[in-house]
Amino acid sequence: MLQVDAHQLPVPEVAAQLSSNASAGLSGREAKRRLEQYGPNELPKARRRSFLRVFFEQFRDFMVLVLLAATGVSLVLGEVGDAVTILLIVVVNAVLGALQEFRAERSLEALKEMSAPTARVRREGGELRILAAEVVPGDILLLEAGDKPAADARLLQTTEFGMEEALLTGESVPVMKSAEWLGDARAPIGERKNMVFAGTTVVRGRAVGLVTATGSGTAMGGIARLLTEQETEATPLQQRLEGLGKALVWACLAIAGVVVVAGVMRGESLFHMFLAGVSLAVAAIPEGLPAIVTIALAVGVQRMLRRKALVRRLPAVETLGSATCICSDKTGTSVYIRRNKPSVGTRTAASVVR
Image 1 (cartoon, rainbow, N blue to C red):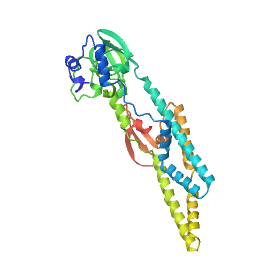
Image 2: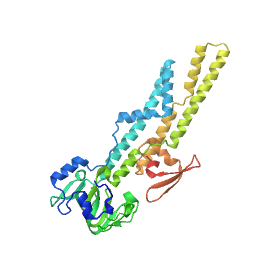
Image 3: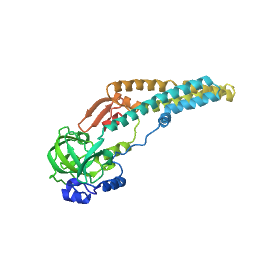
Image 4: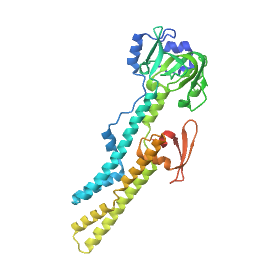
């Protein structure tokens, strides 16, 4: 791959750096060697999580941990019925959340199949149609209306050639391209008229391009890396539930402590009062709350799905419910205002509903 952006170099220099022949293309042997060197032309994939892993990740919620602690205490006190009931509620809650995440991840993987499956290239002087994953730097791409470039490429020849690049730039108007155009290093992607990028679409004309980057080295690959590195933030509902859980724990401990002290002061056995205090604390914990919240969120997710909106995690569906105003421009940047806080935040649309 090139060490500098190809849009600022003339065609002969780009071809020389990539050791490629614009008229004949790569040989089969050289293409195979480069495929081994650079790897398949595929976007970086996040490590696939098994259903069991997704299931056990549901137990990281603070309220769920409190309920598990209550289950253990109930068993110690001999309240087997209460322990089984609480444990059943926790497991059902985890199963519902895990099923939603697992199904959403499989759906997202299916959406990735919409990328260009094949590409027309020039190799050894002839035209071939190969798998997009087999395209390598130095290949000569042949493009016409309706095609999706399999990789980023520097244009060599153009004939009334126009691209739709909304996926990268947010610009809905097709951009006319020219092989003769040269720009400086600071030119943004939307202004690089001598380049085509993976993930965009040819809307008119024909062109020949020299592949300069594949896989994670493409502009689309850079976006994919940002998405995989994005940290998951707690939703407003999760923050409130965690706060409620902590408040309940401290309140229960305080009340149980008062009961134990009061009983001991009246002459009751410390052991019996301790058991009474613990029982009171366990009884005060609303074990049905997580299940009710999960069911409500699941209903919301199903309603969103009927409107063709895919939500990966159950709590994320509540994020939109916490917004009173969403202002979005063509690039997908959103500004939202929460109902529960008079604050304004800015983030991408993808992080609002994740």
